[in-house]
Image 1: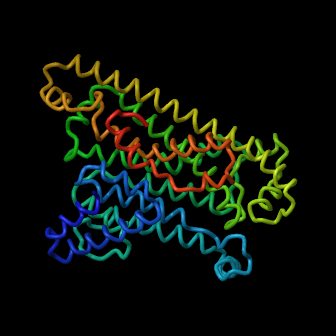
Image 2 (image 1 turned 30 degrees about the vertical axis):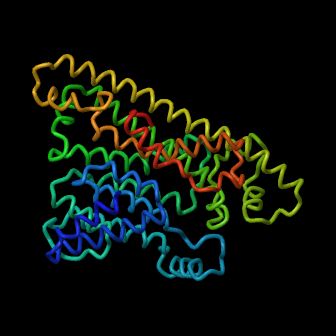
Image 3 (image 1 turned 120 degrees about the horizontal axis):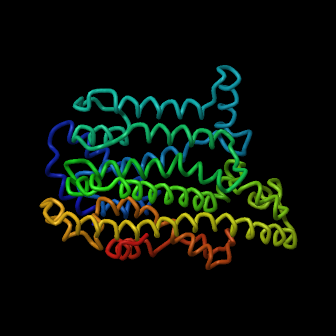
Amino acid sequence: MLRSQLKRQVRKYSSTYDTLVYNAQQNIIQSLEANDRSSYLLAQYIPDVARNAFLAIRAFNLEINKISDGGQNSSSIASQASREMTGRLGVSTVDLKFKFWSDLVSRVFIEDPYSEKDLGEPIAILLRDALRNDLNLDVDYLLKFLQTRRLFVKGGTFQTVNDICSYGEGTYSQLNYLTQGLLLSPSISPSSIRLLECSTDLQAKISDIAAHIGQATAVGSMILGLQYYATSRNQVTMPIDLMTKFDLSQESLLRLCQGHIKTNMEQEEIRDKLKNVVYETAITANDHMLTARDKLSKTEQEIKEILSSHPHDQLLSRHGKKWRRNIPDVLFTPFMVAIPTTLYLNRLEKYDFDVFSPKLQQKEWRLAWTSFKNYHQRIV
């Protein structure tokens, strides 16, 4: 569906600038389709005028998450280059990569949005185009994301699951806030803006929902990425206090993930301990999702009360009748990024919190149907 929509847009591109935007769009679409299919699928629920910006936000998350210091292989070219640069200049390749993105993002928001200069990065091109079209984007959310992610990449560990939640607030929640602001641009949703102006409590609720989803996403991603971080970056993503509680050392977890433990008995012993750690970690993610759902239910009720108490507001009465379960699309669709995390947590429980289960490694095929169903039922 998304590809067919894009093909129909080809005829609209004629100028050099429009071609630049179209090529950036295609580049990001291909990247997300290959590496972040959930974002690729969820993009179809975003209004056309804001879709490119949403794609850029999700691609930004994807690109920044690729930044590493060369991983566990100390003899790799990336690791050697990073060490040499740190020794000579006092900065690592990680520092330079994050500075590149920080400078680029700042340029997008500082320079003239009507400039047709090629910024070189598809993400930057689409973000600038969004500003050119007077869409709401706040650079502070992107910079906060970069700052938080940089601290983690440079060797951070999580002492408690609450530390993972704090990381989630600084990363995924920031992107959720950014998407919320984008869809609340005046050109997209004047009726929803009017709705929020009626209640500061409602404003707080939708912000809180985005925060809880971001924190749940972070916890889920650290469980999902446990093997990847252990094998490619020599990094432990589970809470240290829970590992201590179940007598699971960082060294034994790394050795298990990296295939250095050969005896079945020892493997099973470590895997059993890890299941307990994963279970208690996942509980926190699930708690955040439950809180988000509860607040979403209260949001639905509050909007219903606002509509009832403003019967003569033509903007609200005209558009409110079209809102599914009283919730406007532009308020709900940013919450749909929670769906992949929900599906993963459900599968994790189904397979007894064993991150090494072969069935858990299979691709999630239910996202397209679940997102369609949840969109219409207004659930996350």
